[in-house]
Length: 110
Length: 110
Image (tube, rainbow over all chains, first blue to last red; front, side, top):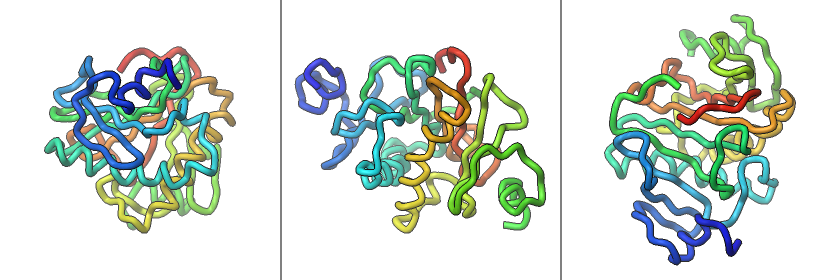
């Protein structure tokens, strides 16, 4: 997707503070952090959001879920909150699926 | 886990307003909703949180991720926010993995 911000980060066309990368995933620091540590974990493949998933994405999604705590531990997070917004009503701003990881402090209620 | 609130809901020992059930998952309304619609989606199997996952849980987790939008659509949610707290610092209160689904209104930032 040539106009997608996160695809441009995957392609290396826009810089990001990357903390984790493998063949399927990329994790990087949010540029407007809402906690002491605020990462975004994205699939390299352009998927709009959870509504856009098909059975073909099963392996990707289990891989992503199993890597979330690994990516959090790399940042010395004892606990962390994972948030994914799906659709405009939820506050989704970039329409390339991303899982926020928030931590590094006692998080307030939501 | 005999002392786990969510295991008791799975076992039918504590009532809940269940909206979805299959062989692996259960979804029900949160008793203290933080949005117009606030569901909890849990694995029937007792898993503490994302830190507790092993490779054996890959199929469960992809199933859960693919079912989140199905469960949200059953409640006529256009958009929805998914939140999972992992560990005390994140605000996790029940140590049986659960994914919040929040929607039914324009959600504020987090």
